[in-house]
Image (cartoon, rainbow, N blue to C red; front, side):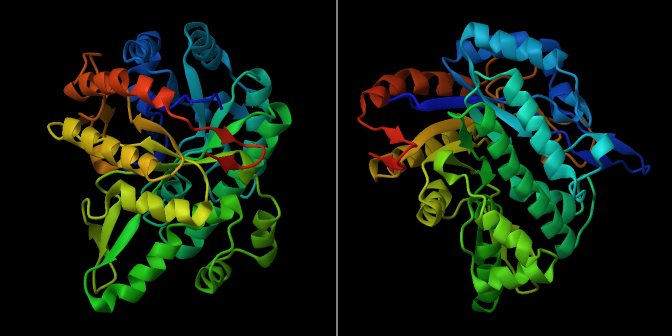
Length: 405
């Protein structure tokens, strides 16, 4: 990583899960299509530059690029990545964002990790200059929404299906890192993952909340080979993970070139009720406290990789999140970036993409007509003010030794 380069970032929202419509038909939700990125991609990249942003969380549409085993359609990817390279945008490449190609099925497919490894290797070989990757975005959310809540893709809602999706996603993540490092040995992996917390409503809810507060770590525990508790180990074995699979993760750790990217929204904290169900708790601990928990566990450098909230609360939320990042940095947490996600407004995230209603969510730095929103103006000014001060700060990350100062 370049010395003294704090990574102010945004992203192009590129979710693409499959959902089931009310008439029973299956549909691919393509957020880049809904937000007009395929039509306005060059303008979108120019807006990134207009903001004074260098780093962009960006991923090609995996479902349409990986057209079959060993087969790829790079046409749109070549156009967009060559343009970013020419104008000086540094992509943090998001290779899998909540879905897989139709020919692959879904996250229950045991062949998915090997196919994804193949794709990651092919991508890195085609664009060998790229350094920053998020191999699989928000593994915990992808597994929960697809195989525990029954919302996306396989639309299953049982613990065994959740663990199956989770282990396949984590293995795909690890194999992709290994494949990329084989091509680009200086690659850095920024694992964007949802940071969660579960609050017990009453003392009787404490046991369930404690279980969920261990479960929230599973995607990173497996990806980073972290030794888990007996409770979580038994839970994994009871729901289909074998001892051999668990030991595979412990023996295939790529932690040395990782930044723990974590995402925080007002929906990330939950209240656990006496009947076992959970509901949104709002911001109680906040990003500062929860990030401390994740950092204490994994001892990895950190990047705030996603946040947003709809107008009229967006500017205040930006200020709150940035204050949390600054406080973490002052308190010695090695935090290396901040992201408002996304560049433009999103569509149908008010229903977690389950309803194909075309509802525009005012979450972006720009609206869908590419007019800047108040939060865009505020973020642009924040970057202008803070980037020089942060570049003067004395910090350095050495991935060879794992030492930060």
